[in-house]
Length: 418
Image 1 (cartoon, rainbow, N blue to C red):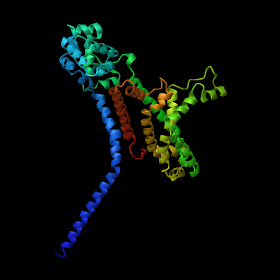
Image 2 (image 1 turned 90 degrees about the vertical axis):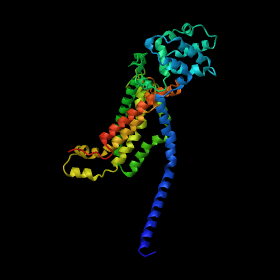
Image 3 (image 1 turned 180 degrees about the vertical axis):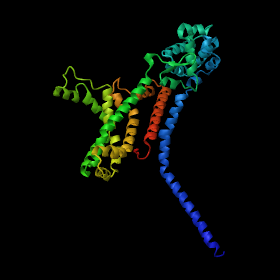
Image 4 (image 1 turned 60 degrees about the vertical axis):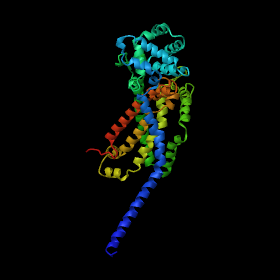
């Protein structure tokens, strides 16, 4: 091998060694973050995808009564009561249930969400289907419940039998499907979700604004104090993190109840009498106050972290040029702190929208937020499809508001136009 070739071979070998070393570093880095990726996939992505699918897909009724739904495919509510074949098929599928309530329980539960009181109707039909067959199943079912002669009832049964449907999203915004599958507003006594959504958002916005007003001077005090005083104040700000949210909320119950500390102080100060003392607990006021106290540290810290990076020479330079103190603050200092304010407000608002424990304990009926309804459908009514639809709408609204805030504020420092 000539002397001219040796350097080229050495360079090639060096390049291969470098590539192997870089590949090894990438594999090592991926092995470090792999557990976190798996945890994120299992604990966040998978449940989110499952909830998304539940909001639009439910084939439990389609699997329970496939023959009945096949007969109803060519039927519509405008045709009147379904033919005898539909009654016969439904009775046969209810009677052939392998373990009793498996079929009729599934149908009754899902239909009851669409038609209140349908559970008893289906249960009676199930019991009748276990007896000797009559000459006409339509007449037999009609004798049990008048709903079987109502085309709207059969239309509701046909709707819940559709594996893919957006009806849960319609219910989540107080809309209903009539027997002709046309959207219409729910009756006044059934309109609940839109009001809860509005209450959730304006309470969250109010809590966020209130926390920002309290946090800004506190963060400024932390940033402008000596190291010893700032450390003590910072410890007081962080102290709530060491206490459970449930414990802090329980403390507000003690403070705000009718015989609590706040009312006793008001009576002692002569501001109110025992007969005219205000009701401070189990209402929207208690929800607002407790949420503000719990979420305050989440906005103090981002603002404080931004204020610490602002050199004090900027304000001294502005004053040396003849600017008044208020003008220096509004035109120099405050604009540079806005990224921290925006980050803290976004953090507080996103958490406030999903608050559940605090409103459930201190809010009463008037202080509940949309999270209480999601919990009700997940734990009590077992209408997971509606709970998923409400959750998806809430998540979509929060992501939209976050995107708007990022577009308005931007990821970097805010520049003030001259």
